[in-house]
View (cartoon, rainbow, N blue to C red):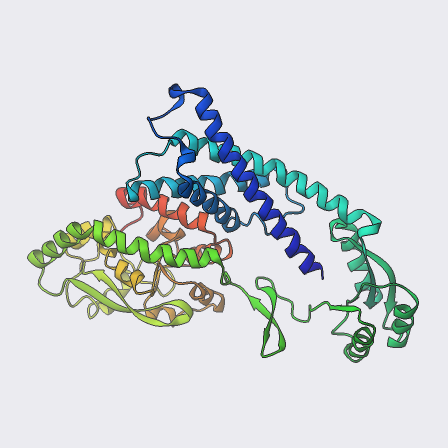
Length: 461
């Protein structure tokens, strides 16, 4: 029931936010018109005449807010954090709009209006969110809106939940009674349910008193009262538990990687579209590199190697060949010079690297053929770097394998933090940090930071 109420409140919150953005868009256009042509960054037609684009801006703003977790925790956030989340989402929205205008070659859009919309929306959404939090907490604390609950379990666990309920008046839960299953039975719960108006029963000790809890839940079923079971049988430090069902059987799902969401689907779509666009734009450069490799070094243009992808699936990754053709055979004799800890093999001034290969590696241009892997869905533009199969098999710590829970990418946090200057353990921790804090904004940030890293060749060998 609490989840259902939250869903309804969340959906209402999102609808009102859409209305706020519509108002901000209208205000942005009105302010631009009142300030006159001097405010225009370039002469354009009125923004209101482009209703299709206006609708796209509103929708993009909505999904940018969702992608930044704006609706995940609307209670208990600081005003500064709320404003920062709104400002980031609107910033991403504006950047996507500008990118779309550039790609579609739309020239008759007023840039000043778009900037004003972003600024007004960030401020308007912040003001409304703060008011929404206050209203939600006030509504939950009003006695007439509270749901009456009975806690059933051990005394210690009951008191722990009582403390949480008192800390969160927005939940709107009032504790009527507490039953200690250590000294009381399910029959006592039946008496309470018959004598008092009860909206829900929360079982805090499903593990300690399993038989008694089962009987008590059946009593709730007979009375038509909701029964909530605290499902903390398994203690996890990373995984996020969610409820699901399989053929009618309730399931508790523990996930330690991002779940399927619109943001993740957008990432997959953006990957493939972005890879296709880059391959078209960079086709002259790809041809030049192909000719350079062919003219300066005997052997194939591409280096193809089996790598571990999502969930450990093996795929063939493509790179421009930057070494001599017998590089893999000569690896064993160079192992004594390995400068990386862990199973990864890296040495500065590798004698196997060709002259043109050294130039390609320094600018990361040897990675460009991986865009075909992205296009096939084997890789992403951003994600943990895919390692060779034999290196993954040498992982000593099981926690390092969790990096396989997301699709590998061309660039990542390791890439922008120093690449080969970073030790293997820290590299693995950066990958897990990316997985645990993933968002579209983080991907966008990494892509932007990758540009100067590639241009300067920082951390490359």
